[in-house]
Length: 237
Image 1 (cartoon, one colour):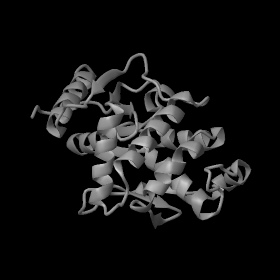
Image 2: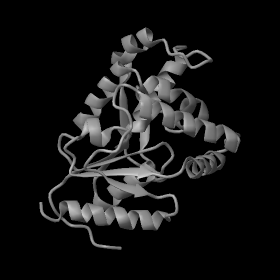
Image 3: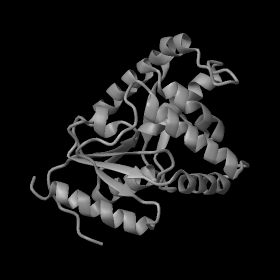
Image 4: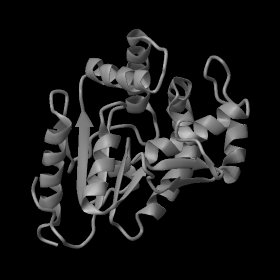
């Protein structure tokens, strides 16, 4: 493994499709270089969980937008440092909801919540606060295009829907989930459609982002590639 440059801190923005492995990459990079990791997707999932708990999402995934927007000031999201499990936990109004927001039901409802302009505006502002002092790695759908358009390193991660569905199914099974590949694949495809077609901050590759298709790469190969890009970005600072 290459040595990490000990230089001025930067912002690393990692965007990509759902279940492309970007969160795992971002979390590990942050740990390797001593940066703070922020999972922006967890923030949208936390808002979705709040909406579900308060009856703001119907069985056909229609969101009571007015009620949710009115409740936004009451929704407090923060992150607890990683514990012995190595996972950074998401807190919703002080409650650790990390395992709850990864449930398939939340996955099915997060896209219609995330397209609400007021939700995105509030969470983007919070995400930008996290980056005030730089030294962060943040992953999501619009980090390099909307949240941090001036980030020193932008990465866009992709892989085929089939590969991403297989990864997501494995992850859910390991956590005791009981869903089929067909269900997970359908969810991946639908989230891609919504993420790339929404009016506010659609998922797209920033013009100055470097693309990583990790469909056939091992985790170690991905990290070697990412560390190399990180070193390049910090070499002349």
